Length: 565
Image 1 (cartoon, rainbow, N blue to C red):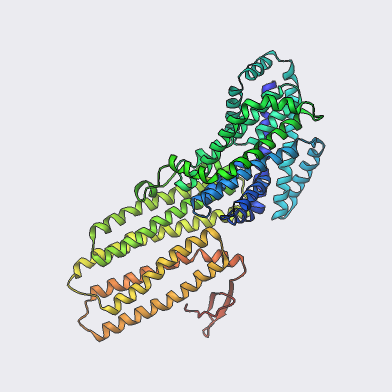
Image 2: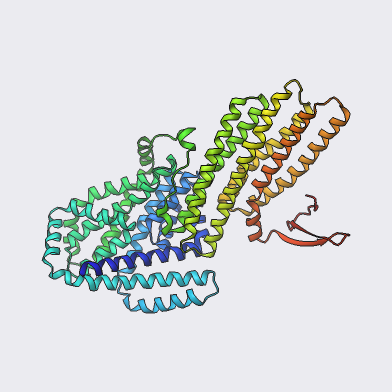
């Protein structure tokens, strides 16, 4: 019964942590992403960003996964990402310091207030804040339950023998705590459990310090495992952070007895001693390791092989469903997979035009086979987001989930256009090899192809950043493209009128290619509309023509666009 009650208390603690993370990420998720993304190459700013984000999310593991995703996308350097993780390690210790105070009296108040705000609020940040308060209240209630469950452990001979054995082998105690922290995906929960056990005199202070060191190692393992299939840039920060912690624990472990003796004269309880030791260890680790970041970047680069330019680098990677407990991390994982999907589709477009110019049927065949890879990406992202949508998601997270799936769908359609229509045109071109395209037609097609390639890069940037200015730029490029497309069609029709001997099959091929480029560009531009609508830069107008029929046009407020555009 003692064990069952203890497990129930720990489970409630983990659930409370999860509710706090969901509430914070839903309410301030965009600000958290912006804070980490704005760190760039300023390591001190990155350290403070990691500290602040972790205090909000109450999980250094969640911060590590977010940072690894940004590093894998090239938004952060490996050195900056390591600085963020060092700050995250310190941030989780400050949360532990706060929770060591006796706040159990606040538990019923926070639970009641959180339920009221979550249930009766119309939505938005008020509802998310209610979820956060409810999570904090459950955490305090869980700590109270753990204390009540652990009190009889002082009288248990079995428990005493286990703790005595761990006290005689501190390395085993470190490994034991690391396993618990890895299984719970939270060093904070593990440290709070250790503090609670020590406060009831069921655990010796030296063994408690060893448990704290083990918890620091264990919480660094899940991010490293979750990024095993990611690219090199995403794998380096979690590995470097784990190596930093292992080295720090190896240095600190022989001296924990001395530290315990130094802290024993202080008139503070066991709980405060453990929390202080946890904080001082991570602060010392950050101070010592901060100047060694560049060397760690070099070391991890030696351990992790370079990404393959083709083959494995293009293969779909299994999305980590363990990140569902932090939806913000899960959404970033899906974004990263969609970006990799976009790289494959962009390569298909480049290959298709090379094959079209050179009439290379072998390259066309390989490009068509790449569409199967795109379909694998799409199926993986769709199933991942569908499973995520079954979780408890807020309004913002649900919208972002739909936006990611919409972009993945657009990319899948582009792949179908390339593998179907463009590749079929290459096969048709073999029937008209004696006919040659005019210089004007070649120039017009190239003037359409190059903007589509630029739109590809800009579209993916808008997708990841959500930048309004970039979205407006993407939409403006669409209007320019439409004008070029109309001009190209008019030039081609004029050519046919002037030259009655112009091959009709080659003419049909050119018009089909122009049409396909227009369709691809439209799919790429669609990512800008939700961003501009949320920012209030688009508005719908109902216009009646002379015949009385209604037309809907979407017009940016600072630009006049014809209805035909």
